[in-house]
Image: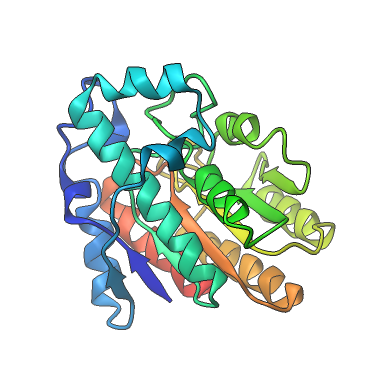
Length: 256
C-alpha cells in the first residue's frame, strides 16, 4: 500500500473561511508523521487534475467560479489529481490512501458546502470510467456526514453504488457497515471516502481508534471477496488533531 500526498497539502491558506476546520494549520502533519513512521508506506507525489478531469463531474459555471479563487482552485485541483492517481494505482492492483485537502464529498455538480470544493472520489471514478477502464464501482463513505455531493455527481451512473455508513453507536456503525458490505454487488473497484470525524472525541462521538482498524479490515475483506482486491481511499473529515494521525494509521493498517 502507498500514500498519495503533496507537500502543498500542508498549506492552510487556501480557504478564506475562518471556520474551515479542514484547513486548520497543521491538520495533516500528524497524519503524515504517523504514516511515514509506519515505515512501509511509500509516498507517491501527485500532479494536478486537468480542467477536463474536473468537468467530468462538475458544471462549467461552477468550475469557472472556483477558478476565480486562485489559492482554493490550486489546492482543489491537486486534491482531485491525488484522488485520480490513487484510483489509477488501485486499478493496477495496489491499495492506496490519498491524504488530501480540501475534501470533496459535499461537492455536487454545481455547488459545494462543508469545506469541500471538487468531488474528489467521484471524479476519480468518473476518470476511470471515461478512460474505459471500469464499468462499475462501490463507494463507501464512513464520514460522520452524508456524502450528498458524491451522490449528486454520480447520480447518472447506476452502476456506481454509494453507501453511507450510519449508526447511533459504534456497535451500530460497525454492524451497519458489515450488513451493507454483505449486500454489496460485484464491481470493478472499491472507493472509500474516509472521514474520521465520527471519532469519540470528534464531532460524531462514536468510534474508537480500534474501530477505524475494524472498518479498514471490513473493507479489505469486501475487496478480497471481489476477487481483484482493487481499492483506494481518500481523506474527507477528521478534526480532532491530537488523534487524527493515529486514527488514519489504524484505518490504513486494516485496509492495506
